[in-house]
Amino acid sequence: MPAQLAIEGGTPVRTCTLPYGHQIIDEDDIQAVSETLRSDWITTGPAVEAYEEAFAAYAGAKYAVAVSSGTAALHAAAWAAGVGPGDEAVTSPLSFAASANCVLYCGGRPVFADVQQDTCIIDPDLIEGVITPHTKAIIAVDYSGQPCDLDPINALAERHGLIVIEDAAHALGATYRGRRIGTLATMTVFSTHPVKHITTGEGGMVVTNDPRLVEKLRAFRNHGIAADSHVRAQRADWFYEMEFLGYNYRIPDILCALGRSQLGKLDGWLARRRALADGYHKAFAEVPEVRPVAVRSDRESAWHFYPVRIDVDRLRVDRRRVFDALRAEGIGVNVHYIPIYRHPYYRQLGYTEGLCPIAEAQYERLITLPLWAGMSDNDAEDVVAAVVKVMAAYRK
Ligand SMILES: *Cc1c(COP(=O)(O)O)cnc(C)c1O
Image 1 (tube, rainbow, N blue to C red):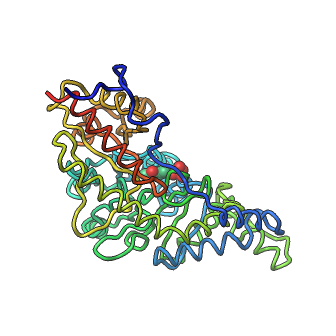
Image 2: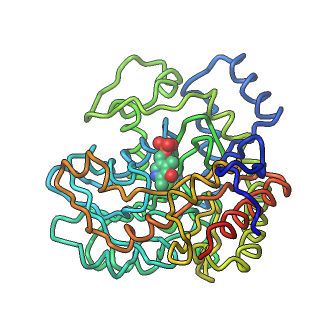
């Protein structure tokens, strides 16, 4: 007899729910923020540049431009890539809405190319099929932390004269063919939301090697004004000119101090994420109903989260029931993602169901299991125990 599930009145694996992602804040992070609060600058001062320089060095890139969110970073990158009214940009449907919303912000039209079934990352062959004379950019998403197929995507972009923006919100510290994510696209975008690898509360970053793009991005985050206020203060001049319609996408020094402090601990946290992912691979190799996403051998995922496909054909229940049963066991599972174009706003824009059949089929089976650097071995064992318990109870 399989153990009685918590959802059916049994005892849960855990009494307090394990979240799917969580930040780590140490005393030295708090110290770094406090020092900034006691300094002269609390926004757009020296901590922004120090954080940008440290981030660029980590990513192996020449420049990094820090902004107020990953979404702002995507908006800035799409704009700097020249996406405007009448233009199209190709992205993945299996992502957070911001990957496509940034195109709408610029007045352009997001076009969705389907994903590969085994990896859930965007398929370069299918990108080629949706390129038109209006296409300006490819916004490639590193789903769950696995870098997308950057060499084929860059080759495609070169053939068609497109700019590649890598949405690496999941992939800080990942590698592709031995190279760290950060210089493998024209612009690479990161997020520092608390569930991501390092946090600034809210925050984002655009990384690039192109100095002309950096100038545009810096002005875009500051109303379209060429120089930041502290640069003007150094020059002791009141004169400035707004050259185009930008935004206030600045990120305060307070948060940049936190980001720089967090960055110093990233490698240790990545190692922990990888060890947890390895543990899951081994455990789920014994569970035929659970299929983790494949990771290509030429790249290393940064494991933002751990997605599995539930083989519902082997079960007496659907994904919804598996999800609810795992939640009842105290496992804070999630689903990444509802295909972007299936949200009501996109349906209203004319996108229809069936556009990307592979992404839709994966969506019906996907469940995200908890994975973050602060998780203990016990936490991970609870996740495995709950999954094994639920599968045993619902197996055909
Ligand atoms: C988190 C995330 C974003 C947006 O980042 P925010 O900092 O929350 O604005 C964009 N794309 C993907 C794939 C993300 O996961």
